[in-house]
Length: 595
Image (cartoon, rainbow, N blue to C red; front, side):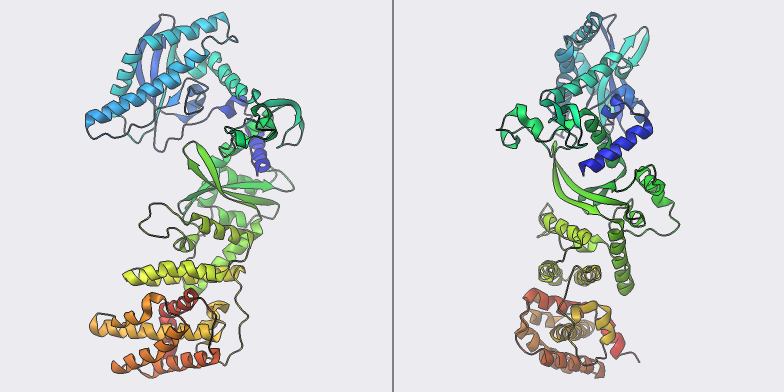
């Protein structure tokens, strides 16, 4: 995966002619708009000249010179994001919270930078004087600066991002910090120092595989790699030996960083409360010689909008490009990286490696089959309904592990155990049944998901048992081999007959008293067999046991007799097939009441 990210970064650097500074400079992650708050300093006159606001402009990112750093201590350049203040119980408390945040940002990120680096021995005498003058001005005017920043921020919407930095007067002209060599060079030097502390000379880089003059073990391209605890360090827990964990040369470090930034900007997508990155890996060529893939990767949204047909999706993300990738030849593979962020750290939830376009195409082919059978569009959201929360009252998605496990099996073609699925299907279906809420839509989602898995070949049911011809053969064949045994067909038809009874009760009484006989959909083999005569008798009472319903009951009896006793089937599966019958009642009714 890292080699693939490095290749993308290398391709981007070569294509755009970027240098080290271009890679180091980042854009702040502002969700909507953004403002830049400038502290205006005149080092020549040794005066503070007030505060100035400007709309954030990404074309000026080289002048802003922003790059994030550690949470405690200054960034590599004197520029920082102002975090939003917490809302207090009163306006005064909110104002105090904002002032505290501003104070911490100003002191810890701006003033601290000059205190830490103004006396650096690598600076010339004139540069040291320049930086010390700025430090003195900031320190002497600290109270006024914070108050004026707070005052000017009252007109900025709270949701807008805010960047705090300096404007410096030089020869009667106001300049950004990125206009000064001293700040540009110090940014590169400070970043370089991060890797020299834990490094070794003339060693093999773990990414490019070449021997390099210097390799370092301190690389922060991904936050799930860390050496901040002794137990994470090889070589006897000695920090100076940490380079052995993950030795990376400086060239690969910058290429990895550029590759990650490109992927974050172009190939990051939402996946039902989760976030994933698509990381392409070419097998036989490079990106430049594959213009179709190049277009999709460089501007996926544009590529999607230019398609001359309705784009199919298997997720709810409007920008999803999986269908476009499915049309590519198998000259590349894709890695799918699901990650979560926890404060400043990152955690890998799932990594699916080496997925060929042909596999993605097969997934869409299975989706097409399901869409045609059901008449509705299938996507992973229908699976997610059963693997989100174990209880609706929970605040977090505690079933992510199971959901991602299924996603992994879909993309890798690994068999799923159907009893495992039935357990989660019925857990959600029972909740909807008891609350009389979304019972039918949820059963339909379970049917579509099962069909999808079967068409992909990752659910394998028992071999279809040879049975007598049935008037409902068309329905049984349409919904796959899941109904390939007599007991399953018997349960299915009893579910149909039960739903017809419930419909009759609702029509006549606006109530469904027979539901109490269904035991909250926790019926076993004995309950199912006892249910059939109960349904028949109740239909007789309503004078509704007509020829159509008699044919359904007859077929159900025939299948139950053929199945015999001792089905050896979990309760969840038994009730799943029963619910399928309830949901597909119209399919059966269309046959028995065709005329």
